[in-house]
Amino acid sequence: MAQVHGGRLVSKALARHGVTHLFTLCGGHIQAIYDGCLDDGIRVVDVRHEQTAGHAADGYARATGRPGVCAVTAGPGVTDVVTAVANAQRAGIPLVVIGGAGPRLLADMGSLQDMNHVELMRPITKWSTSVPSTDRIQEYVDSAFRIAQSNVPGPVFLEIPLDLLMNFADDAAPPTAPTAEGGISPARPGGDPASIRRAAGLLREAERPMFIVGTQLRWSPNRDILARFADAIEAPYYLNGMARGALPYEHPRLMTRSRRFALSQADLCVVLGTPFDFRLEYGRAINPGAKVVQVDLDGSEAGRNRRVDVAIHGDSGVVLEQLLGELPEKRAESWLAAVRASEDKSRAKMLAEIESADSPPNPLRVCAEVGKRLKRDDIVIGDGGDFVATAAYVLKLEWPQIWMDPGPLGTLGVGPGYAMAAKLARPDANVVIMYGDGSFGLHALEFEAMVRQNIPVIAVIGNDAAWMQIRRGQVDLYGETRAPATSLAYTRYEKVVEAVGGFGAWVERIEDLGPALDEAFRCGKPACVNVKIARSDFRKGAISV
Image (cartoon, rainbow, N blue to C red; front, side, top):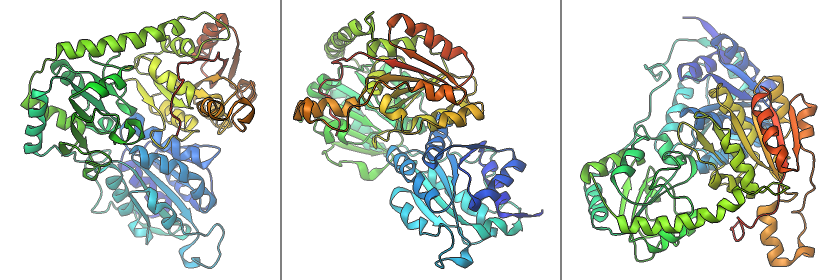
């Protein structure tokens, strides 16, 4: 064994956990970690704002199923990453954030960028702590990975002061080091057998069952079970978050546009890995007379905002397997036909806009044209409001394709970080950011980082010259003349990408849309197709608070 500096101890521990990329913005407090990464084969990927570094770690986790890692410098470096950490915490995404700090021996003496990072991060992380000594760095990194992945995944914050990173210690692996290459997969609990039997009994007796499946399915060791379960158990299935794509768009039981109808008529609603938050009207969207089965990795979620009949503390994929063992088959043909009729009616309304040949292009048509160009392994990121919500309904994704959006915190600006990480995790995939024109402005200069580091991603901006998801309701409430702060201009955002060395195209006519997208997909460098889109009533009435 050898004596190495603390930065090398960080990188050795990260490498043991299978980390291949460290996302960062440079800072003197953390530069020793970069030195270690060079020796341990970890690519250091730099960004132009620490928030992007945090989003990139988040995106890496979504793309790979393993925790992503970012390193930020002390003081404002840590405060800048707070939004990304809060977003990951609310979405249940595992990541490890390493924060620099002034030397411990100068604590509370006013050293550069000195502040209490640990207390700042505590409310939005699963674990926030300061490493006490150089010889325990690897132990703390191991603990960070274990905690980030256990139960409901989430972010962890490790503060490592400058003097600990510069000091030397033995590089022997600590007793906490995983024995398996790439780290140990976290245990995922199955449901209590008695609760599984009760849930299966309700499902057996139900005449109008439905299923809502959320992001927690992404972290299940048995996440592919849903397709087999849906083939056996006849019911409408609605997928949100990172569960999108778990069933192919053409699956006869996958529904996307009839959820309100199904929720109002169902006599049993099975909710897996998604909370009763605003997306389900805090549980009130479900027929008050329906039975409810709730499955969640967080046992304390059971019954929050809505009484449930069976609460199952467990992993979504494991529980679906258990239910299938109790009930191998279920038929509900007339109910499924009724939901399908509602679904087909709503999809037919969409079709006219998807096929529109008007100029400027209809937003649904823009999304459909992007969908035509996606390959089997491609990744789509939603960063915006109105245009992104439209894309979520129009794009026909199927695993291993991945859909990434911020999740329930609704953070704008996630796009560049998610996209950089996704492209690095899947180099052969096309990675597309579906952008609102408002969102693009938050972190547009990350395209410079992409060009410089050869990370080719494709941005498609739906440019309606407004923060439309907010403006629509604002105008309805207060009138056109009393709607400040939500109007933008038809700005030539693609010129920003061109200026830093990428490809840019401005589209106002429908006949120019296809060629611009084709060039963006084949150019091999960061690209931006900025599309002036027509106004649409597709999202009219959508709630934005």
